[in-house]
Image (cartoon, rainbow, N blue to C red):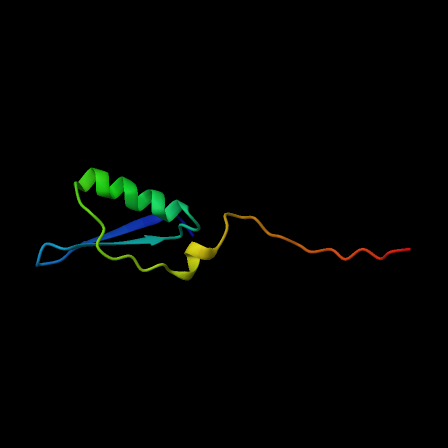
Length: 67
């Protein structure tokens, strides 16, 4: 999936942002950048399951047999 940022501007002036295809801590970097660009402050954050994923890192556990 491509990395995208979906921005919604509500009638009451609120700005809602959703990251799509962005995993891990990188989504927080996007939030900080948008705060700076929009001269805004985050009021509420909801972390999606993608936040807890890692960027392509897979850990495999191997058991060693002691001889």
